[in-house]
Amino acid sequence: MEREKIYNETKLVSGNDKNGIKDCAEHLASGEVVAFPTETVYGLGANAFDAEAVGRIFAAKGRPSDNPLICHVGDKDLIKDIVSEITPLAQKLIDAFMPGPITVIMKKADAIPSAVTAGLGTVGVRMPSDPVANEFLKACKVPVAAPSANLSGTPSPTNARSVMEDMEGYIYAVIDGGDSVFGIESTVVDATSEKPVILRPGAVTKADIEACANGDAAYAGTLEAGQTPKAPGMKYRHYAPFANVEIMDMPKNAKLIGDEADDAALSEVKKPDFAEMSEDDRQALVDIASPFIHREKELLQANPFARVGVFAGVEVKALYEKLGDKILLAHTEFYEYGNALDVRAAAHSLFEGLRHLDSQEVDVILAQGLTGGGMATAYMNRLGKAAGKKGELLPDMPKPERPARAELPLEAFKDTFTVQILFADDDNTCLSQACEAIMTGLIEKNSSYDMLVSRDIGCEIYCESAGITASDGASCDPGMIKAVSEVLGRNISHCRSTRIDPALYDSSDLIITVRDEHAFEIIKAFPQIKDKVFSLSSFAASCGLVFKDAGGRTVSISIPDPRGENEATYMHTVKALKAWLEMLFPYLIKSMGAERA
Ligand code: TXA
Ligand code: MG
Image 1 (cartoon, rainbow, N blue to C red):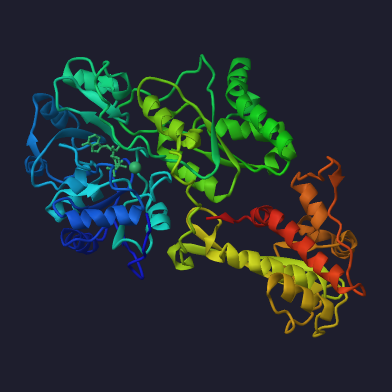
Image 2: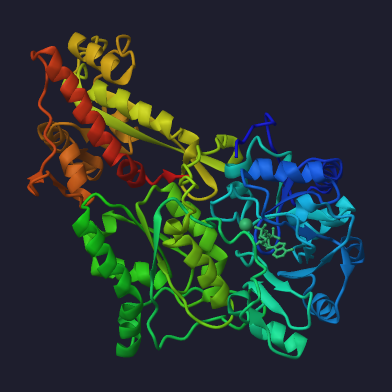
């Protein structure tokens, strides 16, 4: 489905801004699309009585329109306008769990257009408990049809920034209500007959529903023979990040935290203290972490360049660090959700974790599997869909492209932070100038405001070059000017050399030389800054990166000075530098304390 930008700017409205929320509600009632927070995930809402407005949701999501939407209300009185029948079971569920993370399927009223229900005779009704959602939905005065606010096929958003990433320019506004507490979508229960059928597991568990209904509940997958499952939309790829996801089994005898709890409370996060730990606790920890470590070693053996994302508890990262394998650590991006066995915490962070690791452009995500009967059912349902389901794409569905990242202006962050990388050589007319040009291109491509120091602090990266023996103001080597222009399309003919002085060393967070001897010279002259001076090859080694050629032989980064050589050698030099810097880019920004947004 073609997506078309229709707004120059999508408003970001604070959850504390009463007037802003009222304005959003008015725009929604008159046909526009607004994203709003809920306790499960963010929703993409439109007036459920207005078929045209509902069509705009599908356009913004880029999703085909044969998946039914849930109607959200801020007031139980509105339910009677949406449905034509409330069965006794539906009434019990409404009384027991609304407002809360549940969607109840009932027979639809004529007033609800078939665009909302994808032609079904039933409709899902949900009343969120999130206070901002509640205020907004009340102000709308109409039922709000809303799917999760992600681009079709990507993980559901659990904060306003994730919504902006997918929706900037496509919708009127995003209301920011902070992090969604549960982090995965509502339990969907069909209550059109006597027995509750769970179409999608969520934070309201099977046990909760059975207690309320005073009888058995079934999962849609276990319907009796002859009945057709009622959860449409199953044929679409859901929740999938762009990296491959693999599920790491939890130890058989481990006990989950929060599986049957009925609120969103997370356990207090405890970093393991190896010195104080009993032998049993130590073993338990090794049992949790070792599937990750073994699998990652296998992956690195198959592909020494692989970057691996780990979605796991704090214990797992602690064990990686305790092991101290530099190569393993250099190839790993962690997203820690809390205590490894806390299933509420894992669910809370699952989609955000997948999105984050994806943004770090890892090749594979290893994620903690957690098996149980309550919240764990919902968690594993979502994780299962994110993992390995790529083969289940319908043959005529292309694999989604990684979408271009929305450009968040630096002002969107509370604070910004600047870091500087300096490329150094002898006279700053050739190799270091080429590096500066390449790096500047990489920073622009990844856009400086795409970098973060933490999730709240934006990071601006500056790049400079200078020479140890440079005579200030010399122009670049003509061969290099030509090669940079041909290979990179950048003009460096106006660049002039700068001699390194202590102030420049001081203001640089990382100093990189192409040739080893230049790094040695700088360190010899200024031993106090040795921790931030590297040659390309010593930097790669410090990250634990090992390069092999097609024949399996270890390759070191060695780039000769092209001065005095022919045109082809200059071109080859720029191409080689470009390839190395592109490869090292994520490691360079990480070592300066930044990461991709
Ligand atoms: O927590 C949630 O439910 C979030 C927030 C925004 O409220 N919404 C959400 O919507 O997850 P969506 O569209 O991503 O998922 C709705 C699910 C789909 O699996 C859909 O097939 C099912 O509910 N559904 C909706 N109406 C249905 C109906 N009439 N019969 C059967 N399944 C239905
Ligand atoms: Mg969804």
